[in-house]
Amino acid sequence: MTISTNDFQYISKLVQDLSAIVLETGKEYLVESRILPLAKKEGYESIEELVKNLKTGPKNGLSTKVVDAMTTNETSFFRDIHPFETLKKHIIPDLIKKRETTKELNIWTGASSSGQEPYTFAMVLRDNFPQLKTWKINYISSDISHEMLDRCRKGIYSQLEINRGLPATLMVKYFERHGTEWQVKEDLRNMIDFRYLNLCEKWPLMPKMDLVLLRNVLIYFDVDMKKKILKQIQDLLKPDGYLFLGAAETTLNLNEDFQRMDYKQSGCYRIREG
Image (cartoon, rainbow, N blue to C red; front, side):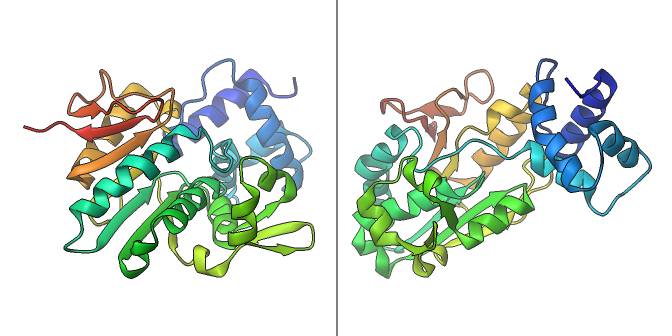
């Protein structure tokens, strides 16, 4: 172990102050595995040296880079397939029926990571609902990491990333090969508006949402922050809109205004009527 208790505590506090993400004792291995490569990349010999420089004041966005390193989460195409099946078979058809007069859908993915989830959902829409080509689709996907947002906008993935969950038919249809990598075709990239958003700070003005995907994000926050985020989502959702959380997440004891929908392993919620 190359990270001291004091350095771990300093980085944990920094990350929580800037992102509200909680790094509890026992996560030293995670901090070390993420921050040591960053330290080397920035020209420091050790985590201790990086922390020492952080303490002297702003260092060319170094604090932001630390947060970026600690908020890069695990992801893949069609991760936990059940939610996407529920979206395809039930939720999107329901929203299409309800919005037939306006022909407009507002969608927000609250944690882009490296882009696999927002692009997965974009492919679900394009591949299964051709009628939406004439609709106005406002699709926002946000993240706290500027580095990840840059990756999302480029939409370039390694063969290993492609192999993790992406069906070959969709790879051929929506990706172009560039050497050993694959890039999302421009038409699909242009469908998504990738934006910076820190969930623990004041949210920018957004339209009322028909659908919010915030999967595997709440698990990183403490109870108070979870409650705050869910209340803000409640205010942002249209009364008949839908929220998707991760399989290990729930609104129970956090926001009783949400009702879990009876779709197997989908993490689908709606605001209770009345």
